[in-house]
Length: 579
Ligand code: ATP
Ligand code: MG
Image 1 (cartoon, rainbow, N blue to C red):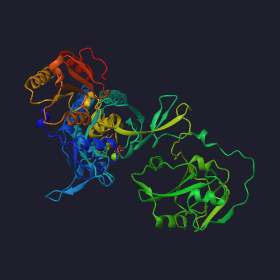
Image 2: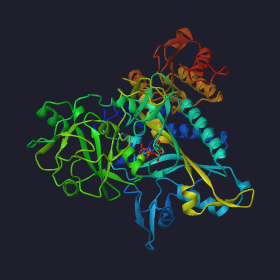
Image 3: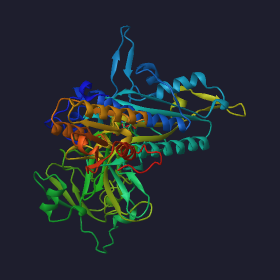
Image 4: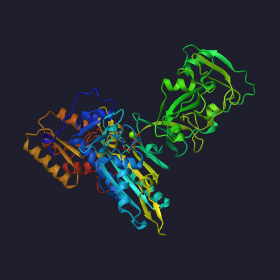
């Protein structure tokens, strides 16, 4: 491909709209352009990388026994009513009416549609196991689209769905997908980690997320420094030992009322009363599926909304507004506490709060806190569950070792769904005894665009992108410095042909531009290897080879240059490690 004919609108300036490096570089390198919030056009260079990732995904999915199909993007509301998600999915689901006033939505995911296919076509255990996948555009009306392709509203996903007759068979498919995902992210040149994950609104029993470690990641993962344990903090359990049960032998004093005008936050109360946050119980009021819930946690810990939501089995959870807080606590927000919560409201205490012998909390009256509250004496101890966010001070839930928190980008997610959808939609099969059973399902997603963005997030320098060879839009760029010199142009052509014959994708920079511009662009767009053909060749018969990653230029013969490029891009016959 000739650069002079290719549409690569690179930018010199850093676009103001972009916050993270991958977004900036994809705009600057002419890979993507924004149409509207969360909507992007993949320009030719960007699309090449997207297709590379898709191809890797396809190869590994096929190798793991999955079969590709393609489902519609528009889905009828009836199917979503059958699964119960029409009312529960929330506003990420873009709903609309067709010309016949039939309710439809744009597919954010395809459990309903694939289950509909299977319920109509699969009859017997002999039709199982089955694993079907597609690579397709999804639409989710994300509340905060950002970071370019990382969190778009329209984005490309690979989604696979497995169907099995029994749990063991599901386990086998799940493990096969787990391995396929490891292969995929390894081949994409990513530093990643599979972590235990929450199953979210899709529901199900077991789940792993594949996280690319990066400071700009939106997820936080808890990794053990001693063992293999790694989990999303949304789910990582906090072990009881870390809560230091209060062992003081002092008998708590009587309950005391303290006037705290305008003092709300844990920090303010601690300052005002000259105590530590660890002696305070924070009281938070939530609305979970329209029901108020009160949660208690020690003042120095953070409440984990995902754990609370899972515990309650709620579809939606959010902090309650002022009117609900007033109804539940008889006080404005900031003064809630366990003494005198309105009857009938569900209450949950974290072990950190439950294990305090005596503590300070809001008095459920404006400008009032209570001191020396004792569970059982002044307020009934509610049900106790771990609803805390794990910290680096907590031990590893698996081995007791030291926990480290890291940021990660979720590029893939695998779930064991069980029979949630097959039961709701009636996808059944006859087992070997002739009994009707619901099909057991799993689902497996990969964000294609997010994977490209994550690869850039991990592989770049101040000059631009450093593509891992398998996801690079081209393998090699040939910078022809004197494009009017026929001999040099001939050498560049010859090398292009030889490299293409070896299976590489070559971008021949034949533009009428200064060498500096050509070098800068080749660095910005991150092609793994560059060959420079310039005047020097006339004297020495040598060209320059520069691996993008090391940036170290070497002079060599045309033949050696070809061998070297094959080596850099990992295409050499004896597969050696790329630079
Ligand atoms: P997140 O927590 O980031 O919103 P999710 O849990 O909603 O992700 P899944 O429903 O598991 O995501 O979707 C499978 C994969 O699709 C994710 O692992 C991610 O790589 C990708 N993905 C999800 N939402 C987006 C988005 N808005 N933009 C780009 N990729 C996305
Ligand atoms: Mg999401």
